[in-house]
Length: 190
Image (cartoon, rainbow, N blue to C red; front, side, top):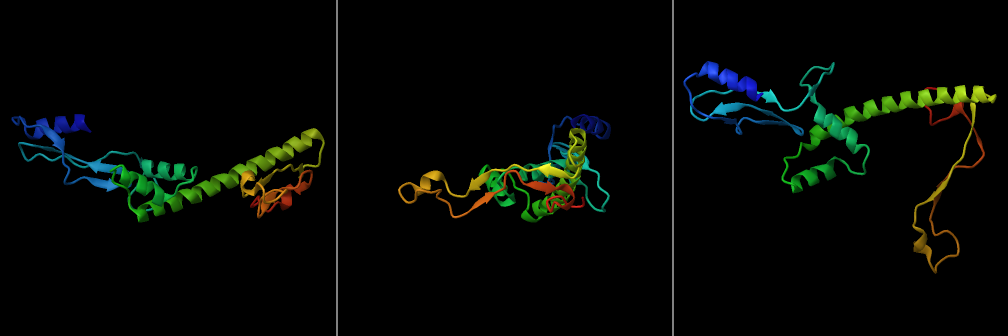
């Protein structure tokens, strides 16, 4: 940006001895990305707006998405924090936070793409399981299932109260059961 702006400023105002600086009054926020332009402090030169982020080419009409906003939403799917928590962190750090509505729109798009990728990944894993079963001489659509239990209360919470596991409920898979790959309800579109 600065190289092209310096060149353009010299061509437009060759005798100007002013300094180029950010035009803070015309900057635009696009989620966590910004659009900026430069102005001269002596003459009337103003550059065109420059994106300070990479744009993602999309098929839908309208403004292109900023890759930083998409990357942020992908990252938020991997941690136990939502858009509201991230906005609070940014604001506490005096960083201008994106709008709640804008973040939610990007989140909706990203989540649809993540679901599609997961479906493709599960489909590939099922195919690999079939190939492994065939190589082992087992029926191709049957897999052995192992599991583990998980309690929703910590073990120390029942000290002195119960001789058993101190939990109100548990989730557990049955060890040694068979799962039919074709009928598995966790695998959409077998």
